Image (cartoon, rainbow, N blue to C red; front, side, top):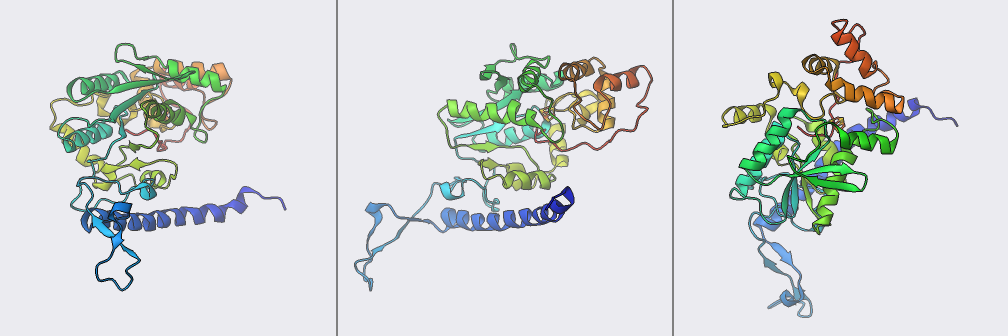
Length: 354
Ligand code: SF4
């Protein structure tokens, strides 16, 4: 029988319904285990604690004794490390047991996350905890300034860059700012990332961070990601990833974008993106941004489109098949004054956090 995409529709529909249900059931199980370990005491089966129960009807059967876990620990053992439990009211979701890294993208959300994590650990990162910024080379200048400021004022931020050899550790002074790591990746792969194959997130960000942690001697560690409570689909997607131990304290603490904006408004410094506009976050002309955002960035800094146009020329393809090339977009916006061809204005949520 010949299968078409129509045959797959019921399968996709089912998985969309069942995945959140499974995730919820798993979270409930984990919450119970976590509560039992932290509040009702955990069973300890180490040999020295096994002794026949006094007065037991079965004297040959050792009794299980109880022991307390250290307070503040959010891990209860390898069996549930893969999926973090919902945070119960009296726990601090930002108090995370090392080893871990905070994935800092240079946005307000991950900046807020980092501040909360620092505060939960008395203002400094504990041993075996790192703040990692994976530089694609296509961030806005204001983002680089923001990351540099936080590295100066709050704690050490480690700058990483994808390289053909794996990754490189750079500094604010030596970090690339013209897209070289991203361009090198495209050259090596010999094709462009696109809305279906978004390998740029994993290759430029996730994998270098993972390799960095391995190189510090940590095979088993927690990735602390800045996804908020108002991004439930992205949170559910990451929670259902069985291959990574991921903490999303902002989602656990019910923090929304509005909370974060209010918090930054009261701080002595803030991210100075042009017009305070999300269009300028992450990679400047990321192919997942909607038409209006792309247009605002090109109007503000037309030259930024040239790098994207050069990548398309190099590979002989487009980042988006449903859009004109970046060179055509540049011409339409700067020469003809507007986008004369309708292009989709939906910004696709990507895995690069803010
Ligand atoms: S922001 Fe967009 S272009 Fe940049 S790494 Fe993420 S998905 Fe890729």
